[in-house]
Amino acid sequence: MTDLEFEIIGHPQPAGSKRAFAVRQAGQLTGRVAVADDNPRSRSWKNQVAEAAARFAHAQRVDGLLAGPLALEVTFTLARPVGHYGSGRNRHRLRPTAPDYPAVRPDVTKLLRGVEDALTGVLWRDDAQIVTQTASKRYGSPEGARVAVRTLEHDERAPPLTAA
Image (tube, rainbow, N blue to C red; front, side, top):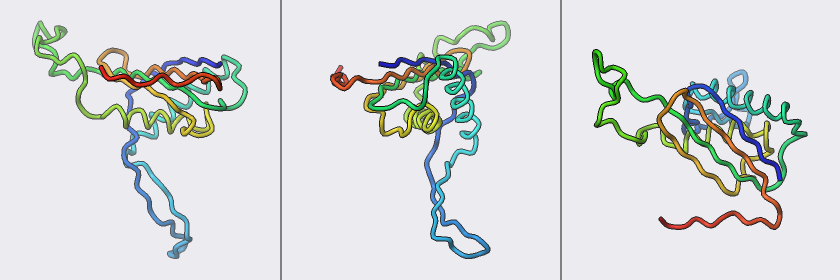
């Protein structure tokens, strides 16, 4: 079993929706289709995630890509908006009406998709290897993400989801 855990400091970006378009060369359709991410800012975030994972894997002497089924857990930390704080001498004090959780955009599944895309070819061959995952977002500082990846043994079963 392999356990990897690392952090990325930076502003998490959602992968966004995908859009496909026909590839043209010299004005002619080539028969190929290219797929692009709708969020142009996601490229920088994905690069940060991939670089952090590669550095960590190298430091831990992980040889090659992880094989087999994987469990993934990602916690995103987002900065609170200025409006959550008081003004004047209370500018560092959280307002009593400030929400505890970032139940606003971007949604956690799109944030997670960005991390999965960034780690494909860096930690694993295909994100289809992820058979169980947990993702959450919270307010805090510094902004970023904590990523934990675990290989699952052949006789190990993913824990069932239970209704709360």
